[in-house]
Image (cartoon, rainbow, N blue to C red):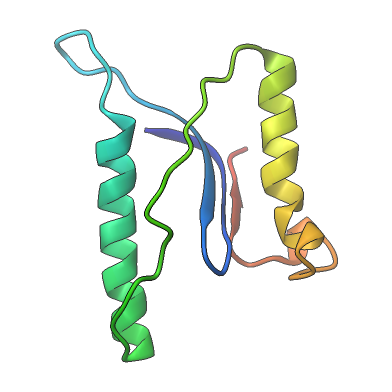
Length: 101
């Protein structure tokens, strides 16, 4: 999966990504990819916190990005979500924001 931008919020995550093509010609299933990421990270978070229970929301809302304008809008939404939720004064200061170069 090619990740362009991602942000980890207190109870959810946003990821702007493109599934990679499989050798057979299809693409990897986004649901399976996100399930693996959520499972791995929730185990790590629970271990660090010394707690059990849900970390992430169960649902997922995937969208197909149709053009560059929509792509840019999604990227900006991800980038500014921590600022909107008052978790950081500037996107650059939020430690759980990833943006590819």
